[in-house]
Image (cartoon, rainbow, N blue to C red; front, side, top):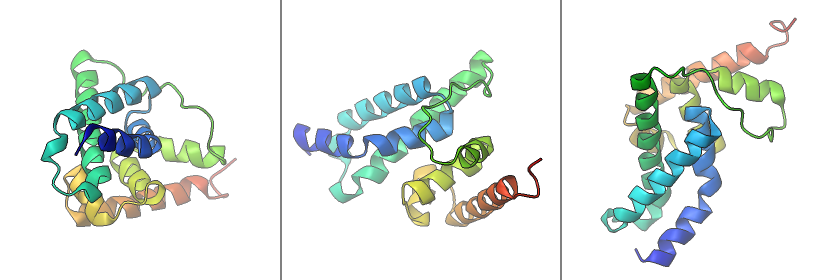
Length: 156
């Protein structure tokens, strides 16, 4: 893959990378750091990608790894994981946004990858390195949690 093609593909999935990184890290600065590191590592290893049509999933896998590296650094440093810097308010429904970001990361990330970014269950399983049945289970649990959080009976 040549330099121009790599940059075109990265720019084409820039928003997708941000949404996934933010959904995992809940901090726009850390999300930007993870994206930058993933793009750099992808650049270094761009010739290892055999099927260019799988570029998005390949780069997304690198990004997920970088997000996990950042989360590990938080734990080592003892930084609180719940102090998040809010993303720009661009979600149409603030209740949905609040409910989505209140989900634990292990449920939120597959939900964003599937329903927002359109990845198949098989692709999500490869990206997250978990069995496809686990992806299905987490999606089911995430939907149930969102449904409960957004149901009118729960709200005061």
